[in-house]
Length: 304
Image (cartoon, rainbow, N blue to C red; front, side, top):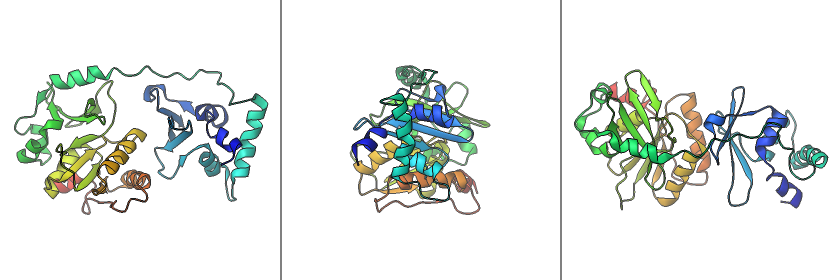
């Protein structure tokens, strides 16, 4: 890569998207190192790599729409013809030459909320009741007491009887929790959506790692397959850049484990699976698994 292009992919992608493309920063969904920007139905997540300062983006609605500003421009400027590196450099060069080094600063300073105090989330988690027996909501979803007991360390019950699924960082610290009950599906206030992990035993390597869309689906799949050598993950309905990184770290940590994108059998589930498959491209043991027809998700199959 030549020096000019190398400098261009380090330019602040947030400013380009705001000033040239009409995207707006979603302050409530952005953190100090991950920025969510919206334009109509497009929702992009941006981050700057610590290793080399390159800005990357990821389209939450399209698993094939990701990369640096080069891929962003090629995808949107290409039309029916090729938009090669020369075209990219020309598009960026005029902008940088007019303004000097770097992109112009936005007239509206980028507002980023302060880092969350996750210690409060972890403290609240410890105050909730451990799951003993079979909570009524889980029973209504066809789950057995033996299944719940096997994965109870990741579960809690609040005062309203809601079932909580812990989401943890790579150091096993609780940073948020999914909250579910009849007609209720939400996430902890002030928490961070990472991965919920069910079934990992310290010191043992999983033979399989299955990724589902919700804690209920993770428990349901665990009950269907009845395998204690599997690590069941859930995303609480979304798949962020940070979650993808967690999956990649687990894939590196357990190179012999088969990775099973086990998302819902619908368009959104297919897009989530494609995102995981693309992130793990080159790894041979990745296999998409689906609920049996005509069921959309694993809990439907369990109850069906």
